[in-house]
Amino acid sequence: MPDQSIAAPVSAAIRGRLLSFHRPPAGPDDLDCLTYREDGLLLVGTDGRILETGDWADLRGRVPDGVTVDDHSGRLVLPGFIDTHIHFPQTQVIASYGAQLLDWLEKYTFIEEQRFADPTHAAANAAFFMDELLRNGTTTAVVYGSVHPQSVDALFAEAEARGAGLIAGKVMMDRHAPPALTDTAESSYRDGKELIGRWHGRGRQRYAVTPRFAITSTEAQLEAAGALLREHPGVHMQTHLSENTDEIAEVGRLFPGARDYTDVYDRFGLLGPTSLFGHCIHLSEAEMARLSESGSVAVFCPTSNLFIGSGLFDLDALSKPERPVRTAIATDVGGGTSYSMLRTAAEAYKVLQLRRQNLPALAALHWMTRGNAEALGMAGEIGSLEPGRWADLVVLDPAATPAMRHRMKAVDGDLEEELFIQVTLGDDRSVAATYLRGRNSHLRQTGA
Ligand code: GUN
Ligand code: ZN
Image 1 (tube, rainbow, N blue to C red):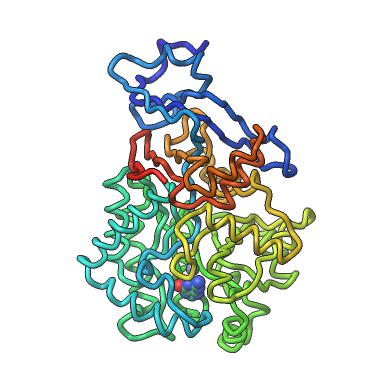
Image 2: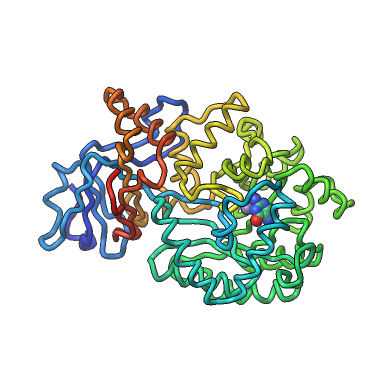
């Protein structure tokens, strides 16, 4: 029994089917990679962190008078989902028809993002964005702002007001975009430094230096991004890499001295363990070796890769045991078509099927929780239900829709099968509730 005299006071208690990973699964049926309690209780301290988890029967006596147990019996309680690549100014770009990457950017994205110069517009969209993340059970996200620093201020302020932690940055882009959407190497450095000073490490917020991609940054700007990273250890870096074949050809023309696309970023010190590279679809062996050696992270964005027709992420090639590249999974809204990490994982499964590769449900759920936390270097804070982690939780209903309820009737107590159905058919309707720091931040309004 834990020593109750030294435990922080309990401020919330959540009952349900607790499920948390402590390592990646070795195969589709490797249930030893997780801790599962059919009737569990999770206690939250007054600081918003997980105090303890256990069986309801053992822990129920620890719930103090005055604390009401949130009873989710029959529902799964997991660590909140983590989205490692999403664009805040693209909530009204999502579902834009008929273009591949470079045309899609020009025709839709670079028009819409100009509106985020207006702080009122940015604030309204930040509220919508956070609502949508929480409705989908996402409690942490790594976010691209627009080029305007005020867009990132609006986003961080909204996250802070809700008790959520974001990793976000102002996009740096000083060429090949409309004048209203470009900064300069100097101004992007200055704005980045100010934003880091204002937000990085303030409560749960963290900064990501965010050069959009090689096409929209001059060498001087990539140099400035490298300087920001060097001068502020611990900040993240995010950009796009090797998404689309026309993009790759254009990068080759713009940087004739570089060995390949990855080398463009490498030359400016942008690779490393806190660096996240969206897409990474068409990489050469040499590029994968360099990403592996530097500890960089390749971010799989399946709904986006399918929707903008970019290509099929090659998980096996990236994961070769002799030079594994760290990976993460993400929605990439608005190139991506869903805010739901469940939908994202379902599309990842299909992409990998086309590659003759596998994505078992355990691997998918590990990826969107602990796996993404490890990719961010934040497994000590989020991504599991271990004591000391933030009590950021998602509660999943196994019978959220008629189709799910009907299909689940054919499951005879097989947890792996149930989880596969949840990942394949689930979406925002599966999310019965979302918690931030042990506080209910979203409760689904209607049953299916
Ligand atoms: N490459 C550069 N900018 C973007 C973007 O906004 N979305 C995607 N999917 N790729 C990009
Ligand atoms: Zn993106």
